[in-house]
Length: 357
Image (cartoon, rainbow, N blue to C red; front, side, top):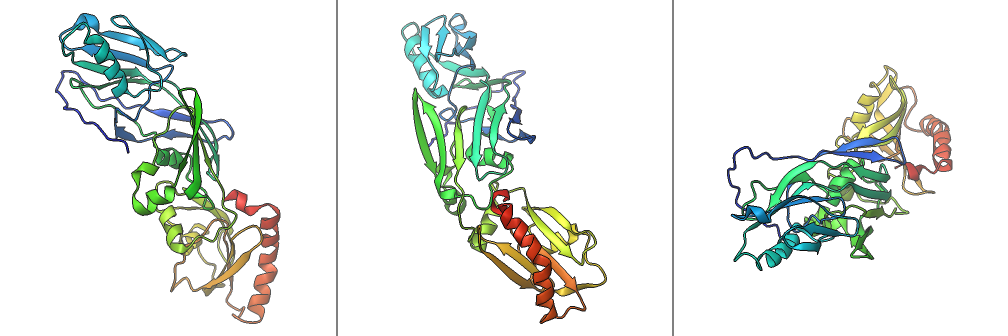
């Protein structure tokens, strides 16, 4: 479990808190979105890598400090006062400890501040049951952010935790296997795979599952074959930060503007969908609405709802049908219902509807 280290903030004149704005470029689609959000820096979480630019200062020993220290592609960085150190893959806390050991040969009990003045370009890969999979390129920027007993301010930077990246990629699909999310990364020349259970994060508040990502990480979210998720878990996902921003529903029948709409994840209700379609026509039957639902590649069910008594939560690719008043609930109603919905059902299955969740 990561232990956050906090340091006293000293009021230095002209000190600024810099926020890193990360532009996300998705290469596989035309989707583009800016990552937003900040966290208080955790010195043990961020890992130094090639392309980072470091700065360090030694209290009362200005001649030993140095700025603009580039971490090279081989993971080494050249420090004028102590020589070369293998800093890539280490946290800033660890880099600080390395420098303290070396500088202590020159100064008794040195007080050192280590800074990231510019971060390396970051690349994260997303695949599987995510709304917008692909490669995301994270831009760099000046941080002026420090760690150490004399740091002017705690670093503020984009939150590279898994949940924030998934949220900024449009959220997960409803058929995502949240128990077996895989993160592949290279660590000191070896590829390792982490398996994360996001259900534990959502249900138990287990923050250890919300892994801090690193540049070069590949995230794969498997897809479940069966969509039989219960209503409680479904609502939990929709109300979470990793839930889908929108999901498609088709609304047909006696409505002002029937069609396919992207229903927002924070308002996934039947009456919200009706409102998006412009509301009922004068001829609409407002007491019984049919909802055709797909649970996997072969199974379909039909629900009958009175929207005045139950504002049901819709699911991705639901087909909502509003009949005419003159069609009774029995006989002609069911005959008319099947006749109208069957073409949409066939089209959905032939197009592999679950792939568009």
